[in-house]
Length: 186
Image (cartoon, rainbow, N blue to C red; front, side, top):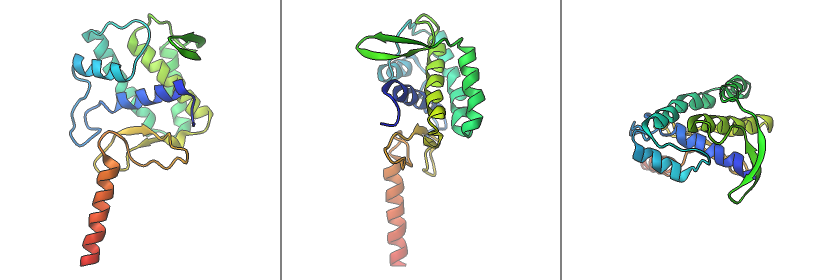
């Protein structure tokens, strides 16, 4: 295990949120355009605390996407001011909590803070762990030619090259195989 459970879950949720942006895959579809999309996201990445599930909350969450995406476009040292700004803007005050069958973990905002604030601060806290453990090389963008999706490499040896959003690894392997076969027959 590279990161503790709550850090890994927050990093996965942040990457998934970024990957709802149009243009991260070949379809160029906004995957967080409706309340139905929002519900689907929240089923996969549950957040405790107050949830309004209204249009204002959806728009605020959508507003986090580009800000989080910036983390995938900077080096480790460049991420520090971005993460610190997220923590400052969320008025983060980390505290240990235990609830809902989860062991001790950190919450850095009040449970009634806006969901978008809680999401941004949880992501920032997770990225603090990535920075502190000097694992920034695991913050990646998909290597597929036609994909801009982001991910965190949780593999033991840090060798993951493709995202999980569009079957990219399989597609690239098939393309490479076909290229080799074409070269062999030429």
